[in-house]
Image 1 (tube, one colour):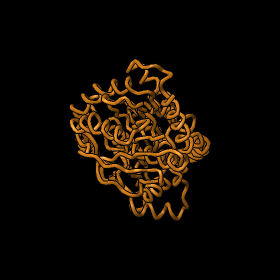
Image 2 (cartoon, one colour):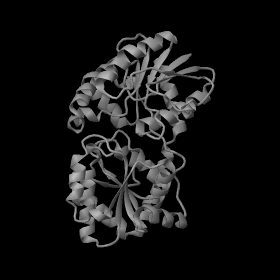
Image 3 (cartoon, one colour):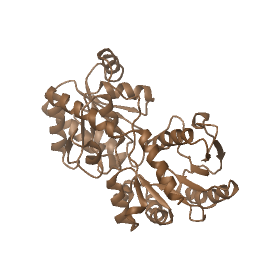
Image 4 (tube, helix red, strand yellow):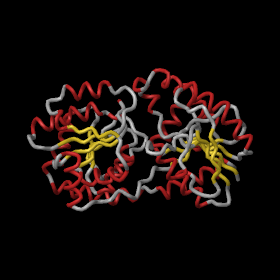
Length: 374
């Protein structure tokens, strides 16, 4: 079997959530299925780190897909040409984009459809592209995979596709995340916060991540809990970050907020392990990988009570309404002053995180591939 794969998000040093999903699943599938051939389709020069096995043939076709017009050209003209050239039996697209100009069976991984519910979070043209094309992609796909039952139901309802056409393949967790020693915690805090304890957010700086609400909640926390506690925000800028930095500039305690930008995975391991807690309160999420990473790192979690997040957090987290600053602030105060609660959540987190692994993700995605070829 020849499986062509959209690997345009395998960007060395710039992997985001879907990029990690692509890397972790393809690494396992190519190694576990040496009897099949994989055509990895990149839109720019690639790193050899992403050629996981001898049964992988990399192909580079331009133009680099940095704009909706280029997305259209790449998927509607370049992809069909490559599928025909390599006689592909299946096109797998881990970011959900498909081609409407090929008869090759296609499997789309649609992680979530936040753009349907929150189009204003995106630049106008991107929002228009997503809301015009993704319903078409969902209908043309032979099968769809998604990362939560919430997203499965949302896609079914919003795009009017058959519920049984969609397979749930939960995200996994990077095995590097684990508890660290007290000495490592001290060294990490010295490096990033001058020795102070801190709450942590990990994710892209994007309106739907509710970073404005997080900043306001932390400001309120500091106002009623004078201490040297910091807030560390790890992640790169994405769309419409103006409100985030306006909110930051208006904070009373902005000197206690640390923006690190993107960090290497080795640093992220330490930053997770040394935090008092993860505070992850987005308005909309298809899965929420940082929640499980925090559990694996042995720290408690505060997170939203919306969309897919309760499916991931289970009974192992403190929930808050992302629209209610007082609820987020109250959860911070609880964890700052209740060591027993922190220990209880950490213990529950170690149990909950075992529900998620990249090995299982890759196994389930392979089953979805086999169904797409039936």
